[in-house]
Each structure stands twice: as structure tokens, then as C-alpha cells.
Length: 517
Image 1 (cartoon, rainbow, N blue to C red):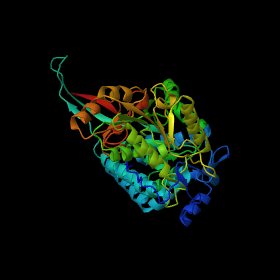
Image 2 (tube, rainbow, N blue to C red; image 1 turned 90 degrees about the vertical axis):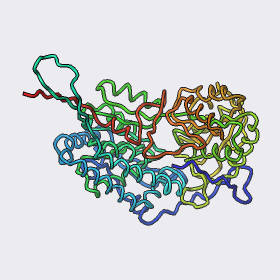
Image 3 (tube, rainbow, N blue to C red; image 1 turned 180 degrees about the vertical axis):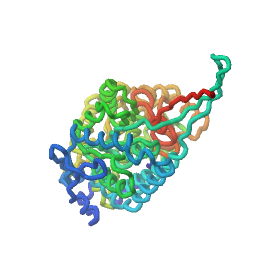
Image 4 (tube, rainbow, N blue to C red; image 1 turned 30 degrees about the vertical axis):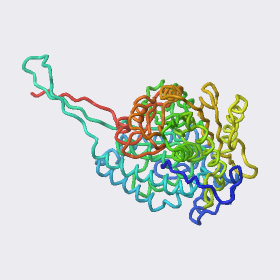
């Protein structure tokens, strides 16, 4: 993902964000996939849900149905877990050498690259994001992450331990540790980056030798279902990756299943807390990447154009539907007014439209429910006295669009300054000193991301150390690399994605001591 946003206003832009076309013209290949009768991927084949129920997938740019998928529930989770358990315990997957797992993952990356244009269109139609972001952001990060993690399959190592005590005279022994796959893993992913999140979850699990049941978000199942076909084409044994589409019932059944060894979840803090409670009965391993309320701190020496572009990119990237969205802007009072004016101009100049329309700079929110949630925060901020300087409403017409919104003069006790909105809504506050800025930035229950914007290296280092967040950027925001761990502190969860870190979560250490006779 990139934090870069083209903030140039189109010629003749109106005082509020322009609404472009809602039309979506997908390729013939994409339309053929949408027309397919999609089932669940269980044990290497597409099968109908046990209930026979179906779910309609909606294009958020138009509000019109574009596909139907199977509606999985507890009996389908049972089938998927049985397939994953058999594949892990007795199937050919268990006998594969690490280098063979690596080859399969690399083959899958090649297939994603082959079909990248189609997958990008699916992300646009399913989620609402604009095509350049999907094709050159999401797809590139997914492929890079998969190829990076493939290399780790051959580098999971144990250690040899030199004994330090001899409790029995004359007895000699050696000790070592090995790391083994944790087993069957349930993975529940959100709707904001459907394909990227699927890859972030399955790649380390498969590199480690686990088997997987993936539960995509109910609003955005299409790219995961297409991925299921590519996994089969790549040659993964049946049962290694199972994909069950459905709603909360499927997710609950997965979390509570006694034959699932670990749950990996990305989503809201509230759902993460519920998963913790449900998983406690079976003592499942957990990794949780949860919500955020990330501060963007602009010091007084930051050039105003850089501050405006950086803050706009931090909040409007992916329509603000990002767990690390820079939704709290803290600006030194000496440049506060200029930055606010600049952001209002950016927000008012952005072109809203369908993601496949080349003119679109921002697509719709993912659903009518999400748009209503965003608007409730906006109305609450108005009622609590925040000053609206841009946006603040849904435009007329079809689809789930919401104008990019900027509030000034927020205060720490306002709901908008404390709760995750997950939409294109920014609230700004001024500060007078570094100490005040750091206190405001850390005045949150979350701790996922933060950025500081300055030309002073000393100040950058002070904030990097002082900000209570798992990911801190300097003069950037939302920059990710497969080789850099990603995850949160406090109520933003625990565990890490990317780099070597998730391999620790998908393996368990075993100590082996051998006496020498």
C-alpha cells in the first residue's frame, strides 16, 4: 500500500467533492466469474452450503446485485475442519518437504500475477476501491507478501542447547528444540483489503506447514473464492486450504470448534474481544489485529504542502477504511489554519465515482450499513461542537458514497476523537508543544499506527520512541513492506503480520532431550 494520493483538483471542481459516474464496465472474464454459481471450497472442490442458502453480493458503487455465493454455517465449518484436520494429520501435505511448500506458494504467486487484472476488478466491484489502488497497491502487496513468505518455508529452524547441569553423575545427554506447525488454523478476515488480508493470513500458515479454514468477510467474498480456484490450480493437496463464505454464524462456529488449534483474526476490537472469550474454552492460540485511532502529528517545521498531502493521504487512502487510517490530525498552532484550509480544498476537490471509472479518485464505502455508521459519527461530531470545514454528507444518487470530510477544532473528549470511524472522516486539533502533542497522540485506548511529520531528526526520534503504537512512520503514513512486522499495542491487538514474526504464531516449540547410552 502506498500513502501517496493525487490531490490535484480537477478543472472546474465544485466547492464539494464531485460525484462522477456510477457505471461499472468489467471485463468479460470478470463478468463470467461473477455469473458462476459459487460454492464453498472444501477439501479441494467447490460444494454447496449444507443449508442450500445463498447470499447476494452487492456492488457498493451502484447498490445492485452482482453475484451470489453460498451461505456457510456451522455444518459447513464442521466439514471444512474435518478436511483440514485430515490433510494435516494424515494427508500428503504433512509429508511435503519445506522446499516443496515454498514452490507451491511461489506457484500461487505466479497465478495471482497472471490473473491480476481480473482480481483487481473483483476487488473494485466487491469492495468499492478504485482500480489503480487495487491493481497497483493491493495486488502488488499480495504478490510481494506471498513471495516473501514462501522463502521462509525452508528457514524454520530449531536450536541445539548445551546442557548446563548434570543431576545424575555419569549421565550424558543432549538437548535441542524444534518448531512444528501448530495444526489446523481458522482465519477470519475483514472487508477492507480482501485479497491482501487473505494472503497475509494463509501465506505464513502454509509456509509453516499448517492447514487452513479461511472465512472471508460476508460483504466481500469474491476474491477469496477466486483465490480458492488458484490454490487448486497451483497443486496444493485437497483440504490444505478451505474457504467458507458466510456470516457471523460461520465465524462463531470456527472460533469455538474443538478441532481448530489457532484463530487469526483481523477486524474490530469489539469482535476481537468476543473471539477471546469464545476461544478461552478450548485454549486456542490467538493472534488479533484490531482497530485503531491513529494520530498524524505535524510539527511546526513541516512544510504546509507536505503536511496537507500527507494528512490527506493518511485519511482518504482506501476511503478511510483502513485500520491505521490517520483519523486524528494534530497540527502545531503556527501552521494549523493553513493546513486546515489546504485539507478542505483537497477534500472538496476529490472526484467520487465507481472504482472502474478512470476519473474516480474515491469510490464508495463498502455497504449501506457502513455509510450509516460513518454518518452517525459525523452527526455526533456536529452535535458535540466540532467545526465542519468539508464534506459531512452522502451525495444524492445510487451507491454508498460519502463525501471526504474534515472537522477542525476537535477536543479529546469528543466521540470522533476517541472511536474508530472506518471512513473518510478526519478530526483536527492544534497543539503548542511537543509534550502536548505526544500526550494528545497517546490519549487513546488503541495503539496500531501513528505518524510524525517534521524535518527535525531529533524530534522524529523522540516521537518514534514516545508514541504508543506498533507502527510509527516518519514523514509517511500507511507504508508497508513484507519484510517489516505489522501489528498493534493495547486495544489494537497482539501478534504480528508480515516479516518473520507470524511464523512464531503458526509454529510451536518442542524441546527434545536425548540421553547418550
